[in-house]
Length: 117
Image 1: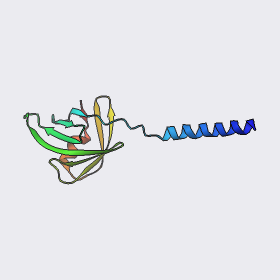
Image 2 (image 1 turned 180 degrees about the horizontal axis):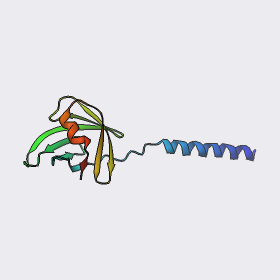
Image 3 (image 1 turned 90 degrees about the horizontal axis):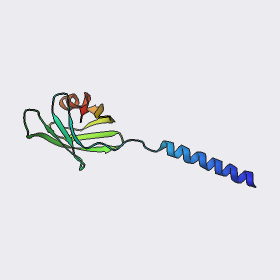
Image 4 (image 1 turned 90 degrees about the vertical axis):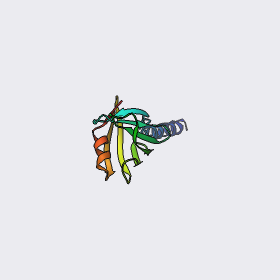
């Protein structure tokens, strides 16, 4: 009887380790200001809004929205029609994007080279 109980406990422990290993490890998306390779400042707000300021101007050049699903971010609005979908990863102070689908060449140019805090 004791062996049966130990076996059940071992199986339960293995299952819990597997479930914990499958849990999402995607970090929280960083909000705040980032700069692209063109010197534009892109701000990600906690409410899902994003803005772009060009280096020669303190005024907002474009605004839009973003939504998150784990390590996938979808941009809408702004200076592009249609949505842009990217995979994101934060590496130190650099926010990197890999395009999944985006027809907007301007947005792709700003994001594919990465953003820096």
